[in-house]
Length: 136
Image 1 (tube, helix red, strand yellow):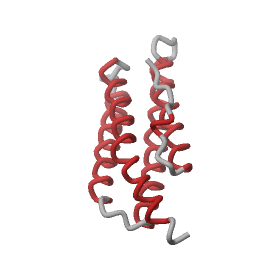
Image 2 (image 1 turned 60 degrees about the vertical axis):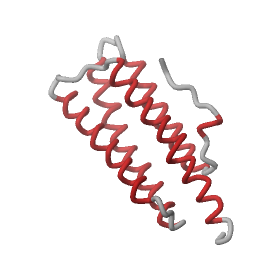
Image 3 (image 1 turned 180 degrees about the horizontal axis):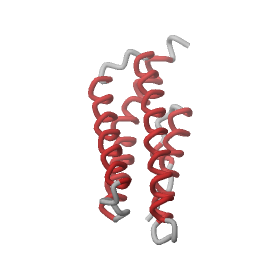
């Protein structure tokens, strides 16, 4: 089951929300690859893209956190690192043929992203809007 973008996922930071939408699309692309003739090739390509884009997205978020002097940056960065570590392990398993796209994997990715957005990212979005409205 794919993820539908809901307005409740918006953080209030347009750049970050657009990046989240792209991450959602990548996860949905993984879902669409299931059962296709070239499934493993599509999975590898999308996973590489997911790893690269996740690094980019997290760097962008962390730059904004630094700019706003976000007090919970250390905990937030740790959550980012945890996900990157998990995705890299999944990619290695996929490359070695140990990983197949299953419901457990898809559920983990979807749950992590939505939980992270609704918790950590929305919290940061509120802080960012308050912290930067006086400096811009």
